[in-house]
Amino acid sequence: MTSDINQVIFARTVEGQRAALTSSPKLPADQQRLLLMLNGHTPLGDLLGLVPALDGELAVRGLVAAGLIEEVDATPAPERGELSL
Image 1 (cartoon, rainbow, N blue to C red):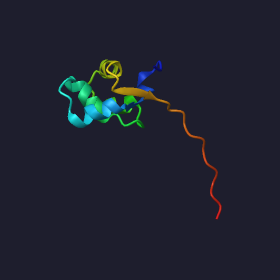
Image 2: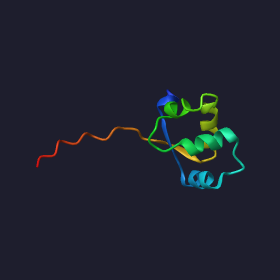
Image 3: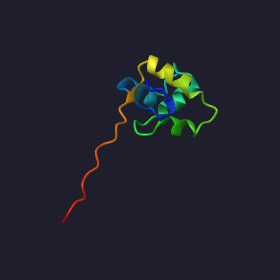
Image 4: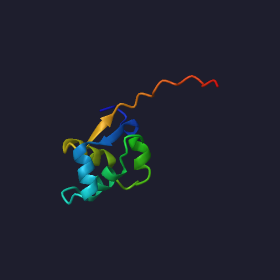
C-alpha cells in the first residue's frame, strides 16, 4: 500500500460488489459505508472528507483483509493528441 493512504484509489473486488449489493450484516457499519463509497476512481482522502468521523485507515485495513477491496493503479493515462477534422 502507498505511504500516503489518502492518495490511494481503491475498488471493490467481485466479493466486495456482492457485499455492497447485499448490505452484508457481517461488516461493521463504518466498513459498509466506506465499501459503498469506493468507486475505483476517487482517492481515499477525498471520500473520507465526506465522512469525517470515519476511521478510514482502520476501515480500509478491514476491507482489504476481507478481500472486499483492492488498490487500483492510479497511473494517469497518457494524454491524447488533439483531433483534427
